[in-house]
Length: 369
Ligand code: M6R
Image (cartoon, rainbow, N blue to C red; front, side, top):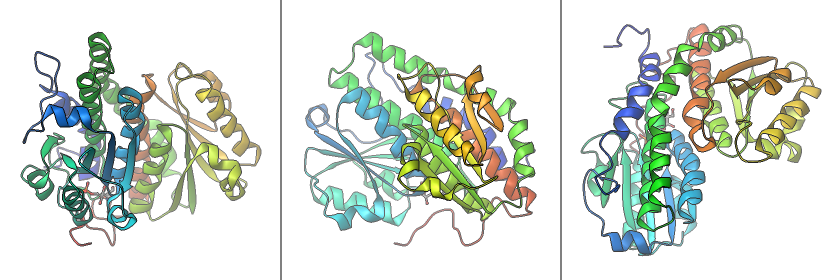
């Protein structure tokens, strides 16, 4: 059932083109409107919401952080992302004009369930982005948009993450269309950008050998840092989480812009630092800013491990190791740039002889608060 792979995680990493393609399939009706899977939300309600709050834990919360960039950009609706276990306790401002989006692979994470219930008590509308059919969040939410990633067995989430980003993007595109933020041709362009992603994800998988080789050489590292800006920031957080949970290595993800505000003090000779470098064809100055962060850490002795888009020779000049992913519109890039980081954690943990599918102290779904 591992499909010829040594671990479920490796299989699930390779399932990612299909997970994204399946999550996209058949979602849009003849009027360009999103099909939700279960439950109906009055369009009037969706037109009148003035805020979105994503509630989720762990990797699912990082999918929410990625989605925030896209949904705010496309819809102009403010988006907050709350760790589900913090949500209730901060006395959040939630009312009938709030749309709460609960993201969960299992649909059984107790903290996220409790956040959903709290939101509903305050009158909010809840959409679940859930992988498991008939799970508690799927049943309790007002509507569900299923991620069709298939069963995820490995404790470390991989294909569910990509499917969660994909489903959240569909929701953002749907809201932009419904609320008149985008013209039909713009909506069609966004959908076709998404449709192009499974093939690009496959290409990342097909060209992943260099990251495996580097990962296997790094089994004795004690700390690895991850830097990203814009959507690269949640990707950095996810890369660090994967490494912590699988390889038991201290890893931290930072917003690259925060470097000078503290984290750069951690950089010393030969310290490995991953940097997610955005496409040079993206928003003005984003690429240049992140490249200057690469130079800053390298000047202090860091060993720079750079994820960049194919053809970015400037990034290669500042990298000790470079890993290429296909170019894509900036909001689509997390679906690509996270994959080398997943593979890195998988390979490094395997090289240390750890049980990649069942890391110590962790459960696949956290059903207690
Ligand atoms: O089932 P859920 O998506 O609600 O789970 C949320 C987190 O527990 C989960 O993503 C966790 O962080 C993973 N082990 C990360 O790889």
